[in-house]
Length: 534
Image (cartoon, rainbow, N blue to C red; front, side):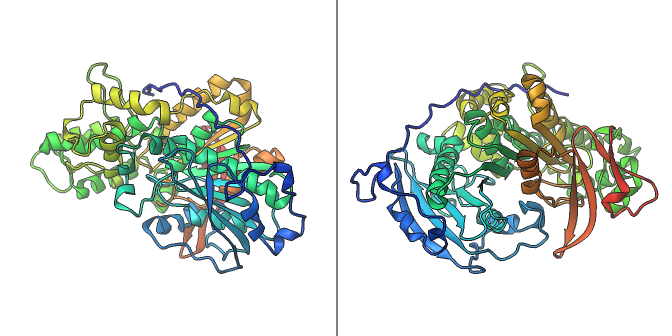
């Protein structure tokens, strides 16, 4: 397993305790605002406007009736409404119950404008709080995740992390250009202040604090969860972390690698048809009977197929790889290396995921923004000049203290926190890298960590969702069972959903165990599999 250098993450100075003020600016003692009675909140959430918050402005307080909520339709909405992204594992999202919607803009600095919403069930609150993580470069609220959470009885909060992705200046990583405070908001301050504010409003609204607090997020949301665990270990009792791009400089460097490599040497460009040829060969060589039938590699880390086995013996045909194509694929699997040390910066994707490969000489936009805007503060930065030694080191020095998470999560575990990480084998992020990080976390924490963290690797799942595998499971149920009932997630039943219907199920096993078919049962039923050591 290649070693990945991780930048230590210093703890941030905690924000000052909020002062209770009226919206008009006059100071009022906290005890002068009595808690709402247990029944008052069911009919009236407007009184929350009189509950003053520091460095915050209410922008909307309203009651949303059952079935009345409709999320804005964006590209993010299309992702978040897939069953694999449903926090409770529902094949189809049910309409919302009635809730109190509180929209707030937080402004901890002069350059901060952090849109935040807290949704409070009007009936059937389960006494718990859920923070919903973001996706991509953030810039919008995770409304669909909030609908799921409030439907499960949770008070729920989400934030745009301090910028608006629907505007030209807020799209991608542009918002970081010349705005260091907005970068801090994005990195950690927005999520923490959202959490603090939500807890205050929950206590005010229900006349008691939340009994448990959970965070769930994937991709950026997974990284946000790790940052919360590291910087603010008492914010959450349970954190679900999907496919966290950590350390993000190294991960985004790997995302640029195949494009950079094939830009500088066009002979290393590979067509989509040849990647599909490679994927077919990998499947034929390494997939189990179940995997071959269902369309994915069961245990990619045990696949011994090498691209050179497809090398053309003579003239190139559509059924073989040229020497340059073999070289390109081998370097994609390996990932970029530091030319001075020879060490892999971040490993390439796992075998079985070749359908998602690209080597077309072009940059991956999300990754490009990290270097161009956040790290180098230069919209004209030429990605083709990327130096894999000095530029990676510079970007790490500038962004690592904000966005990289080391393996010391012991304070979170000591607080009683539980950490569930998951990732798909067909993700561009190789699960072996996350497994290496997981092992480091466990080693650092000692016996406490072994009881407080789990990793799930999911055959056939893509980035956070999708793919041919079973991608739909209840992250919320798993973390609640663990924190509230002490049932650790050794086995989770997941489903493959098509057109809103479950077409197969399969157990997901706590790493390093894998689901093995019993050889005679229905391949589409989880009961035909058992978790076993590889």
